[in-house]
Length: 225
Image 1: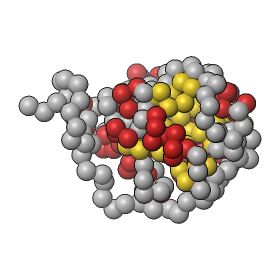
Image 2: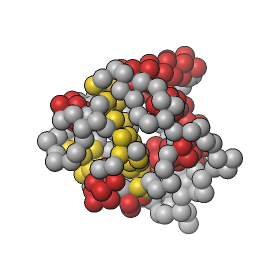
Image 3: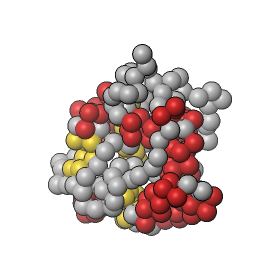
């Protein structure tokens, strides 16, 4: 079975979340991922059919999750074949209506967030977000849970690992605003579907070198002169 990894890079939040996934998760998945401009509806729909696992880092609302340039990838009541698939949506609000809808349509498991997913960003790392200390602290609990899923662990086990990661990060965080964001994300994190839902196990792979810096421009003031 294949993974569908949809990783838009068109703005600061998507670039940061995508960068963390490129560094820590993508090396464990199939060689073709939908990165940047490929994270759009048609490629996503084609890749979805043979997959058992879906990961996105796009923006979300209660009833949709989007890809590059906010093109809708999944929506409540959509016609996509989701039966038996596991969905991890690192997206704002998509756990509110979209997650339950995917489960009603036959998805085996879902993990997402019923509120906005929040974290601070250090501007100095906008082209290499996997080095941003704020992004790493906020998103490494997600990475730990994802790695457990890719190890063959269950939906509930991965959920508990992410929860414990947030709790550790909250205890270690000295910045009051950053800590409040971690608490918010923890309080809005949910898992749905079969607690024992699993995906095909993927080997543990970590690249010795980080991904190359992002070169595509982003909104001012983050463009280089």
